[in-house]
Image (cartoon, rainbow, N blue to C red; front, side, top):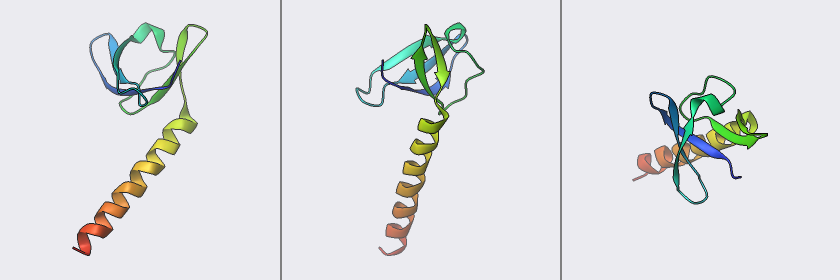
Length: 77
């Protein structure tokens, strides 16, 4: 199973996106072994989703770099 990114939380499920396929999936909150937050990266292990903190931090680094470049490019336009 690929990793999923939590887009947002609904009543009793997390709306997630598969970053590779862009597919949207609903994951029941009782299948996530912690209190999830928007933007978390999760992966399925032994029937439950766990937080992948390393993947989340790597994703945030990429986003920050893109934002920094966009801000720099806007200044030079």
